[in-house]
View 1 (tube, one colour):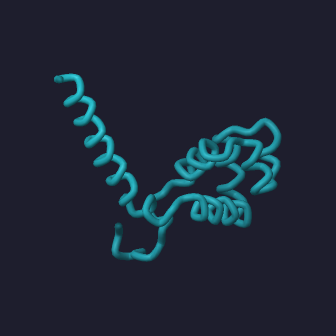
View 2 (cartoon, rainbow, N blue to C red):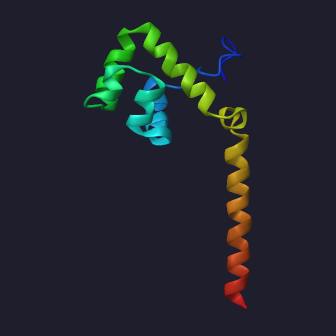
Length: 101
C-alpha cells in the first residue's frame, strides 16, 4: 500500500473492479435496489455504469460506500484469501492421501 494514503481502503481499487465485484455479489436487480440509479435499473452494463459514475460524484460515493460495506476487513487486507488458500492446500493433501491408500 502506498504510504501517501495508508488509511484509504479504496487506494488501488479501480471503479471497474468495484463494479465487477458488486455485480457478481448482488446482481443488477439488487444493485439497483441498493443504489437507485437508472444505469443499474435500465439496460445495465459495466461500461454504461462506469461512464455515469465517473461523471456523477454523489452516485460514485454511494457505490464506494456499498463496496466498502460489502467486503470484510480481512478481504481488504488479504488475510481471508490467504486462509482460504491454506485450507485448499490442506484439503487437497487429505484427498491425495486417501487416493494413495
